[in-house]
Length: 343
Ligand code: SAH
Image (cartoon, rainbow, N blue to C red; front, side):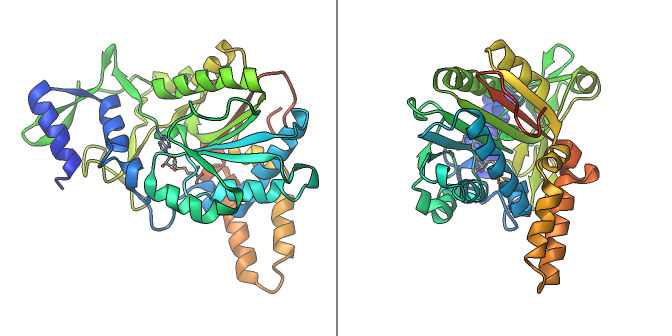
């Protein structure tokens, strides 16, 4: 299908010959008019993919309890910012704040700050989170400078553009007739994500100056063993199905697996303390996921279908053959400390 972005890319390639995978991904996701993360419904049943907080409230409940715990570990500051990077439909922030506000000490502590590029999703977030009076930002730079930052990023870093290399050569897109093709041919041997590294470096400075914690959950990999194989993790998702990366340009979600080793190395180099990496299933289990599941099920005795849904949701989040292993959790703090689930 020829899309407006296909024509923009093709025109560029006619004039310049090639475009890096990085620039292609950036354009597909963030072109001001046609970029996927500028307008698409993206997340949820009516979108192209579903995320952990949309699968089950257990995820947001447990992350809310974890945030409350992290806030205590950080000395329970009287005022703080809860920051979500890429909040999707707002479900995760809503669940986290509902959990936090059950604790009287923390009821009025957190101001909600959302970093979001997508106007359609901002409107959804406003509907779900209005009572928390969120403040939206296009980028991390304008986040408050005077408050400790409690940052959560679930499935955010996978949406940032990556560079790919085939041997020593950066992988690009070229035209063959009217079709887009990758060049050079051959296996991808390495990927990097400059935007993730830059963002983490900036947030590291802010955490060191202001205090707080950053929790990253995403699908991804660790270590050089992975990188030594065919390391192509670039993928497109449309209507909950994998889709060819170079087709229907701008109409599918483009993502890449997150390199947790690279994130940890950058954080360490910037003087942060690294907690994890731990597989999502193990992390949620350590936070008492199974017990929380049973507690929620006990409240649904008259509704066996709801109890079964809770069980299914928990299985999907935690089982190694579902999201439990592929998704990973890492946290960063400016000071050494012990954080639940990540020891
Ligand atoms: N955290 C949510 C949604 C994850 S989907 C959840 O768990 O359900 C990715 C989110 O990041 C979307 O809200 C998308 O619009 C946003 N996003 C992607 N790239 C972005 C960027 N460069 N800047 C700001 N937001 C971005």
